[in-house]
Image (tube, helix red, strand yellow):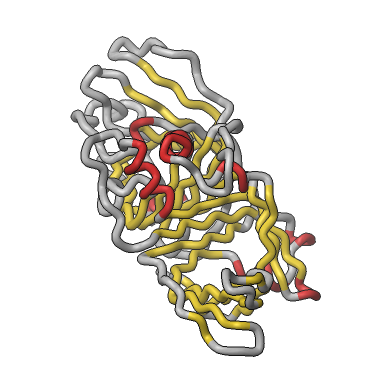
Length: 328
């Protein structure tokens, strides 16, 4: 698979079908609408990013069940390494009253934010792409396979999950977004674009000793040639919900063991740092904030360091996240 990139940034919607329960027989739902591909490797059509412009829900008769939804924000990014990531939220979300959420606030935050990551495969003969989830904000999602029937039309991609038991099908129409202009690229941009998997987290007292720090179970960070990024960070020991919908305490545990944010990024090459302009965050209060990250970049690894901060014992400490580049 050649290393081709185009990236998504735009409007998306959080839908119930992003959970684990993809039920029903989708075989007949889009078979007449699938566009035959002339690309040697059908996965190449997906590479890059797509901005969701419209969500439609149609009944068995093809008529709209509800008005189209067009006001959400998020990413869907497919990489040439065979990996993918999704991050979705509505534009207005309720902030926590304090620094940490209550169980009810966590439930509200969870219900208005979708994030998952993993790999993808394409079945061109039957016209569907499968997202193989390595991690998900919803603990029940990890390890699942989400099937999406697809069709392409010029610069758009339509994805349809399996038809529900009520016969209603949802169609998500995405628009491909262009890469940054060549004139605006630094050498760091060119070398940074791609998917990375977490390798280790460390923390050190400034000019002093290492501090023990919890590791992530799995995590991706993605930098796309459109100038946008997203990050998905999952802690170990997460518990699936007892039922299809989480109770408030289950939501609190899910929010506390998974972090995610997304937005444009800028490169300050002379000063050796990136800025993640976070338009969206699993914590509603962090949406709209900037995150500075000093970086070290090689062909195989990326190390990111936020500015040093005072820890709970009054010591100045700095964290470092080491990421390994993902290849085909």
